[in-house]
Length: 536
Image (cartoon, rainbow, N blue to C red; front, side, top):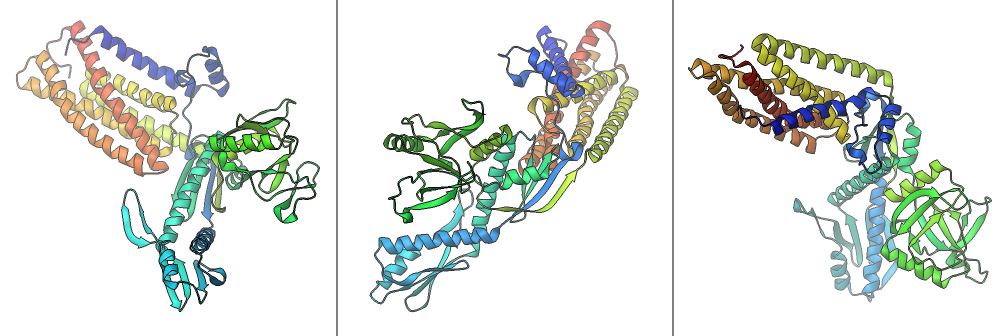
């Protein structure tokens, strides 16, 4: 135990100094943090510069709380419309004649076969549209997507099952959450909390945000981008064209119905500035769309193509030269803010279903400040009581434990600042809890030392046995707590995750401070003081 190398001593001291350095930005103003960041050379990664403060959660700094509900009836309609198209395709591919058209009623699609139609073939092919429901993890559940029946001769009805409706809602809700998350993250809002509530609702919490209307507008924007050729030739049949509103001048413009390229073909979109200094949105197509766009511009030099956003033409430039690089930019009288918002929406993709706000709250910073003060008080009282108990019970070794405890708390705060983890009220509770667990490790070590010396061992033997024999117990307890905290983090949401994050970081730092750091201080004390018995 006494063989504590200089390398280990330096490493522990550097870690303690780093904990202080990375905690200090929490005491600085935003301007000071930016000045510190700017003082470092550009080649130094920003992640390792000590300039980040711990972001505070909604319960500490206030913000926007939105509960949004999905249009589940629209999901059912969408599924029925897809089924209608599938039925038409099957009938067309197998040349099965029908009477009338393919009708939709609720979640059912029905079709009446002509007298000369092959009924068995039609039933066989349409039944192939019904497939088992399942996923890669749970496998098939036994339920199927459709019920195919013949309520009367030559009338075939296909009905979407309840299980399929629930599966579709689940998939679209998961997709919607991901789209909303990308939109909000790209917008620069720190640590948004998004989680599904019930079957058809999404909870959105944005700490520090004060404008719920802007968030609702950002979430529900359609951002359906299309590239269509402009129909300038008056000889083009009207059936092949449509007239859309044109943002320039408030007029209209005639374009082809067929969209050559869709917004989902974009590989990236980011705001920028054009040659005239006006804000634009730069875009890059994926490989397939780049080839289509290159062919389209090569074949139509001198003609115009329209960029259509949500059914409105925002730009209709002329094709001067073939554009084969797969990139370009969108003009449209943008402001820097609107160009940035459009780039965010195009990058995140379109929302698969409309979301309606059913609950809206703005949490003021006053409530958050009260929570901060209460959390600080709880943490300080807990730390003071624990430190006082260790000092009174273990004397000099209690001072060692308290110094390690101080570094333990600083390491938690420094790690959260470095990782950008959000501090919440449950997170403060997690820190308070880890204070007890960190000191508990010292108690196990010290009491083991006392027992070993009472059994007649020498001081040096008792010190070594205290650390060596208590280490297994400390590791067992911390590993079990780490597993529990990890499960909370993986399966929990919102405040539960905030608690789990501080617990996980606190457990890892406990091993460093309560074992390694305390051991170093006791080793140095033994070498310097040459004691004959324990100081408690």
